[in-house]
Length: 145
Image (cartoon, rainbow, N blue to C red; front, side, top):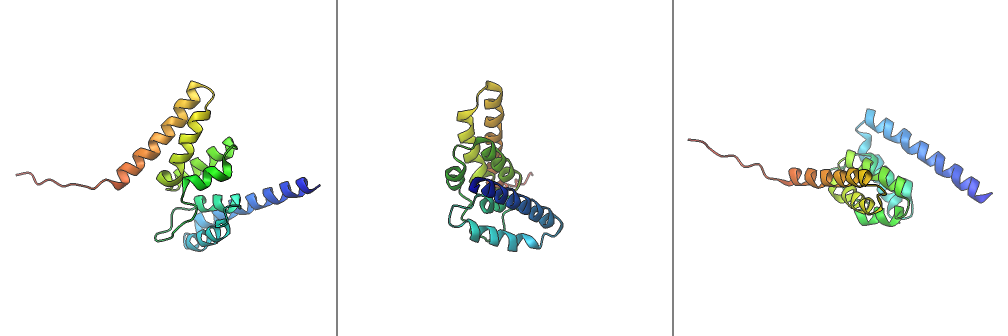
């Protein structure tokens, strides 16, 4: 009975998170407040859904995010490969490529069953790495005489 109630709570909280993500896309002013709520809730490292909510939103400028650590994500979703993949894709899509998605895809590469999947996961990891390199590169201008 407890497991059924736990599953219901999990699916309800997942629906709430999806709703919050949809609302925040329409009202970007909510990003900061929702991000802070997710960060506070996830700070104990036990609330997977709150931690996931942090990745549903783009990084908030100046926010020191407890969850912006790939190791924290791997600790929570360690052996749950499909949810781990989904978290990696969400993190990649919303600007957490270097901090979270890269670590996730590096781990998933080791678990890929076929070469096709290994190439796909590896390519996602390389995209994250390249995206971070491009973002951190300095633009150099050269004056041509």
